[in-house]
Length: 534
Ligand code: GLC
Image (cartoon, rainbow, N blue to C red):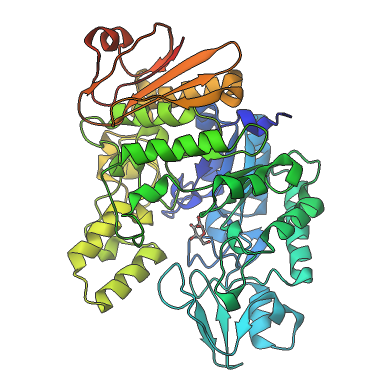
């Protein structure tokens, strides 16, 4: 199998509004990111996935783009972006841009023209119908918005300020590839493709994900923009199965480097229930089954997967599945060890490496995210009580991941000198912050640092096969084996002591516990985790 740089990479995701504010307006910005590149270098990551920094009215925090080739004023300007690319490059950190091309903002020039001038070529860049059908928006309500001037409806699978692009239009597709090429010329190392599985939709048949032309479009995009450039392309593919993942990421197919699929995250919801029907009890047997499926069915050379617990759309894993109290650091290490020693490219979401937690949102006035706001509005109208709505938002709302990065124990966690930040700083920043993490050689940060370093040097992380071991329900243990090496990874995913017979001896590669004690007592303590070379 031909190996690429991203097989050995760990990616760090930055949510620009919340990473570092350099100008004191309470919102993070590009200069802020530049000022913390040395911190990221210390962590050792290979690349940054930069959530959108393009010009945008910020209805969905930048996932509604009004100009793909300008930078939002709140983040800086193109000179700052170029400086970020140059400064990151000096530190051997690559920049992966978020590519949001399923939709634009309704303030994008194309949509403005399409709306004002129904006979313009831009009209067909979007999806217009005389009558709405049953398609629903991810952000509540119908996916169709009435446009009075033309007496037609346009499709928006997200907010009504995010009209869907019509990928059937070849001129539109070419404009997108040209735009990508200009970013590639600026020196970006790849793209994270937002809800890319939706671009092949057939609205009239209510087909949204995995539409019939999806893979043709991706092959065309590859030819037009990606061929022979050794870029990292990762598709956000919610409903992918291992079979579908191979379509996207088998190198012979010339589509994407890897998928970013959410099957394990599905366990945060009740089976077959809507998103807001959350489940905080981690179903470990189901988690084992899902990971084993992906580790074994996406054969080496046939496709590639991403490994993650967190991103900007998810609750903090420590709060939903870990223990964000007594075992905060220890459960954080357990999740990190479990994930980072599997096959795939690991992603760290800002703050994960210091064990940031969900935020105790008091009421709706503290909620910013359009998805949560719309959900609350709709649920209230349907007569649900406010407290149960708030419980859902507190458990899995997207704002949890978006509160400012906690740099210090000081004012606004060192994130900003503003009196008020765009989302509140978590009160636990007094204990949980970068400064404290760096000062403690046993902190979660250093576990991540070590895992990132292992990823770069240990080829078995790519090559070795995967075998799930038969253990107590709450223990996740697996072996990775190559022709001449074997590794054992054992993690107790619970607050309770668990039985575990360690039948082998070996060199400890990484862990958060004393392996000799595990061996002697035949028990794992709460959140014990380790990897042995056996
Ligand atoms: C993706 C993004 C999410 C955004 C949505 C619409 O799922 O990760 O943040 O709201 O697409 O662009």
